[in-house]
Image (cartoon, rainbow, N blue to C red; front, top):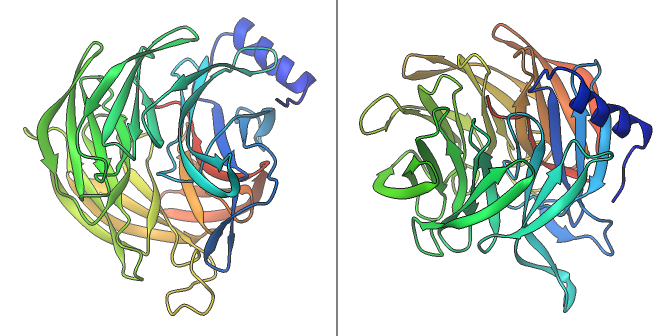
Length: 385
């Protein structure tokens, strides 16, 4: 493991001794195993370990306070890192690993790391078994329960949390091993979760009662290959990115009305090729979609564009509307709003950096600020509020 020495110690001491201003830590899990070469994802020869970078956004520009070796993966929606509400721990899933018998190939993994963010320096305190090919992970607002979507077996793993102790508490099955369970998002009141299934174009509704998690048998239809999903902090709606088939067609973002009984899709808008990341603003009034825009395709492809775009959507009641967009990097993944909603962070895999954009009303502007990380930022996240 690696750290930044004194900076990490100062950060950890502040976390323990200073009244908390929670929601200020931005985490990035960074994949070093793969690279994109002219539209083809290939394994890096003798790669360095994957990493986790911790930024403190209370200062500007945000500063790195810790960087440590933590297994991760770019495969799956860019929600493979979750932060506890009190910023005490982080959970990082590792969807795949290099094949021990042939390190030029990747195979499904089945682990999740528990990182103690208050240790001096932060460190992995447990490695837990998940289902096959874990992807999106979420922690409830009470900090007592975590759910992990297992892409290769159609299940969601359940974990209880007490301090830094994370304990397996079973699984719930929502589909078969081809259903592609991708990410699971938990409502603010902790009573419901939504699971995207890009393999069979569904979003499954789970009920939660304490540690009892059940599949309600209610499936929602949004668009082709629902992948990333995020729930508004006011609990009124969820926004889901439908990544499509990757054939150059314009793909979509849908709004799911969570106040309706049962929940249902009420609005869908077109955003462009492959909306990989999705995030709702802290005030629940806007949504951003990280659109690859063909930046991950070969340069001679008719669908290639030299860069992605961040699309800004407005939410009025149960309707989405397009407000604007801004250029971003290549093979971009996740997005995160700053706690005050004035900035958006975007993970650019090819550039190995987090791009920072300013949001002024309905206008997105590239600040020119880039936060370098050691690896491709596969997922970035603040604690869910």
